[in-house]
Length: 321
Image (tube, rainbow, N blue to C red; front, side, top):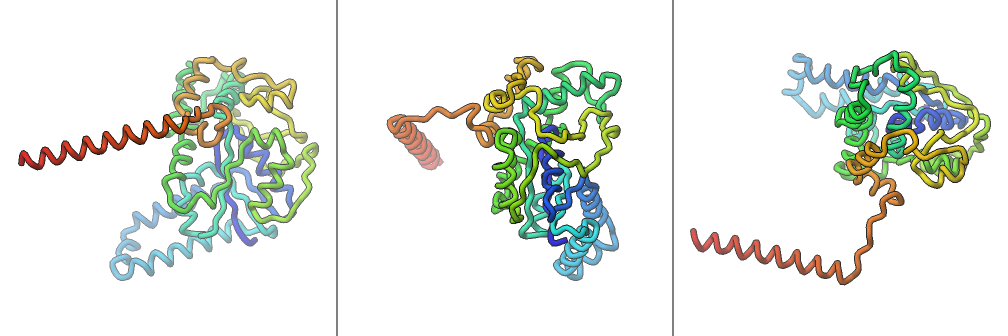
């Protein structure tokens, strides 16, 4: 094994099918949801709370920190060891450990799978209807649709937590070059082009993938999730039964609009709440109106006047003193 590539992103956004397509490359070994992410987090917590280890920091903290860093790298490499050159380690938690990964592997790469959040919620709703005898794993509100949406999209929710991680990427300097945003809709529209581009970014040799014969090499424990988030993929690439993306609905004739599955009110609230996400990653959905040069000039002049007024006000305060 030469390196580990990390795979994270939204639930129901194609991460399982992507992992298995990557696993069809002869130089790649793809994992199901991996314990590695949680394991290294537990290692950090253990080190941080060990009084004997903390005492060593008083002598030479830089040396101790470097020993721990090298120890963690050695553990991760040994845990992930395989005959293939690249291991794709899948876990949504990697999104929250990007700074740690950069500290461990300066040239690390992480793939973040994206999908229209409205379609993600619709996918979860559709599956929930088939498993009504079971609650969700975290025992969130399960009797009211709006309650489920609020729980899923909360900051600590299974969907909302990913939004926090994506926002965090924008707040970390010099990190974006290590991140590949993979849109599920782009893959559905042009699977060959999407996959070829990703292989190139990963510095993998070209590999022809037969999307009519997708091989599932990973196996998840769906019972752990009360069968709410199935991970079984179809051998032939097919679109879901619904999508907000007009191109996907046009290409896959049987694909309906998500509005047929979920309340329009809830879909609208999702779009409004996460408009920043759409503007960054799905700008074609809600295009920003282009301002004329005259409007931009007027905005600049108004801003200058506001600044001048604030300065004058501060100067007047100084004179009073």
